[in-house]
Image 1 (cartoon, rainbow over the protein chains, first blue to last red):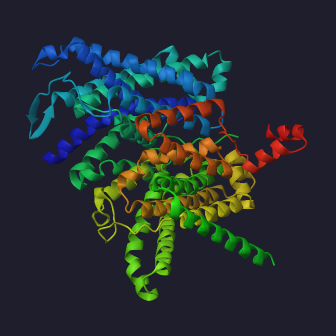
Image 2: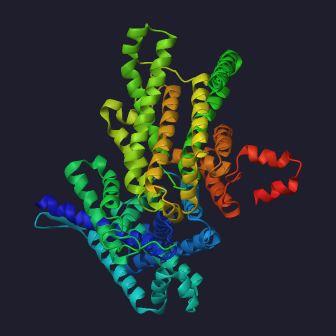
Length: 303
Length: 337
């Protein structure tokens, strides 16, 4: 029982990271119908920006203590800004020119961008994993046998704050409303006077910033970063988006949590070797049983 | 009469291949031989992937997984069958050839079945799901082989003998299989079924409205494509004296995509050229290993931005040559547009 609770706690904390990344996939897919394969790399760049920001802000001066809260926030914001910039740049140079091309073209472009970023990162940051700076020192405490750490609690807190912020942004701001309009019908939105290019740009910016936050939380959780960290994590987050119903924001959160849970439970009760495989089993099962995802709605394809 | 002519062509081709094989094994250095064999294997991979991604327009980014299934299947069953066949025929060249080809066929069938398993659920849906499922499948397959004790787990499978798998793969067999597969896929592409496949690529809804059984055809093309990758895997395994899980990483799938995009999506001769190009360029860039994938990635992006149909587009080499040498250049250039 205690072990089960422990796995659930770990699963939910991992899942909320997946959820943050899945939001970016689902937002971009909702608007452009494009699987943004480079999103996993945007997440990786966010984690690395956090790494370098923490080091240049002099984390080593704090010895056994973690960063002051203010500096940790600065690291988070810097990483989110850097990734947002990267996301917007990718959209501008790689996706916009092929936006009206047949579907295969942007897909291949996206894979190209993803590969480019992975390999550029290996050249720039070296292919070896690096230990993540202790932006937050781990403090463990026990709650009825379950080990809880401040890191896990922070991951929850940050993820929830960001998701609520996104919800507010999409439901209450003008830009958010325009995003919803563009995702329903891009051409009609343009006819209504919405600057669709600007909306697409802000979608990439917001999604990428969330991925960067996910990257820092991931670094805190796994205590290391590597140039290829975005590949598998990105894929899992994408599966989370599909599981929840791609294009659906709440679905992405639900899917992320479920994937995190499934992964931890598999690792805990089946075999750690199959923790990565379970995600894809889920993907295939969901594609067979409910291809629109848990919260998705079936839309008739228009000619 | 026609049959006799075809037989004559096959015999002539076989003799030519055998002659070249003798020439190669005599004088050419091993390094060059390896490139030539790899080029042949690449041709099979590229032409196979082109059937599903180029002709049918369904994107697979996990074909290395099918190659791995074929490689492990051929290596394992080849090893199991070899003693029995050698016992029945007497050890020698004939028994080796039979074992090898049987093993390749088994590998191809297994890869084809894997393709069916992966394709059937994902091909019912829109194309980009296939991309993700194949990517996931490629990873799962590698994890499974990495953990399969009876296949050597992470060290890889090297057969029963300490020398590793027998080096069955030579010029003759690689190119015999390559030619056979290219001819089969060419015939399929230009048949009525092939036209339906292109129709799916051009407009799936319209194709379906014309009563084309789109899902069935997509699954068929996907399984055949996986089977071709399986043959390539079997040939690769018996060239390397063993199969290791890390031979079939994501990079390998990317290599295949680069081959068909350089050659032009949908062009069989383009895929052949792309396959050869990659085998040669990989060897030439051996010292630039860490820049290789950066270059490939840039190449992918630039080709997509500048010339999304690939260098040849869906034209065949013969179309290009005909347009170049025809006496009415205006008509040729008009068609090309």
